[in-house]
Length: 78
Image (cartoon, rainbow, N blue to C red; front, side):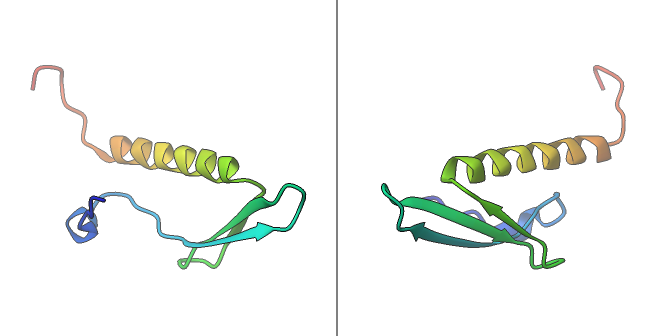
């Protein structure tokens, strides 16, 4: 496992969440998830691990777009 020091990346857009996972005793059992934002207390529930991963991929995509939008424009070749 690779650990990344987040302090050196704090100037970049980021999100933090408290992740809760639990196993619903269905037949077959199903993993559920909830993310809670410590910044505003917003909670988001997920009916499957797949839906959690889709959300995280979309959220990181939005963060990349924010980072790109914040960069000053440069002429090609600069």
